[in-house]
Length: 305
View 1 (cartoon, rainbow, N blue to C red):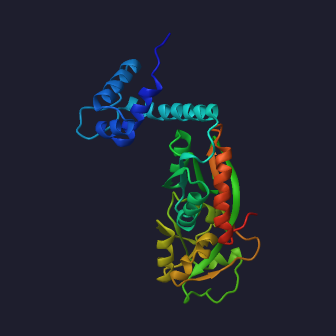
View 2 (view 1 turned 45 degrees about the vertical axis):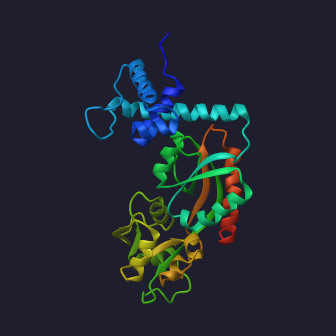
């Protein structure tokens, strides 16, 4: 029978990868540095591969180490799910790791965090803001338990709950040629240059798809890294932009001195939802998270469709 790595060895290895330091990883695992180092060497011996590149002063993995990281994270995530299911852990007690994309987090998290503290006092909520692709990877590897995302977005191996539709608004400087309009049709977008977030932000793809801009020259070459940057660029007269209603209701456009104009039907929208790893047993917790986020969205007048 082939000798297999232990979960403890894999836990030590992943801790080392995350902390990039034997001493810090040992502290996290509540063991001595020599114990952790010995476990890593035993793991390398079992696998017959060197996982840590010890020829450089900075921490780095060998190609074999890179391969083991992904598989070890998946094994540990499934083991954790098995343990939680067997114990029947009460939802939203202890640690819960929630990922949120940056086009949602500033408009939801401050109020939602307070509601989580009031509703689930035994919850230790750890928040991670990142782009959708990075959060999807973290979901798969078990580094986060759930994610607040915008859809559509094709993510394999996840389940999700739709919370609401988030319509897009046209936003421009008061001096813009369309600033006096009461409403717009999607075809009107062909008459102006649009500033959108850079590639990698799902909001860019949602806006392009929802507003049927895929084959037009409307989208500017400039790509912002945040909605705040977009509003400032639009206020400077470099073009107009598209903002989700969640940002508009939160006062982002108003604080930047922009005029916002709604679209006539069919109104372009993105969907907001909670996603979790399929088979992880997190549905009950995801539903509890969805209820809290839903309250915040309702107060922002972003209602479920």
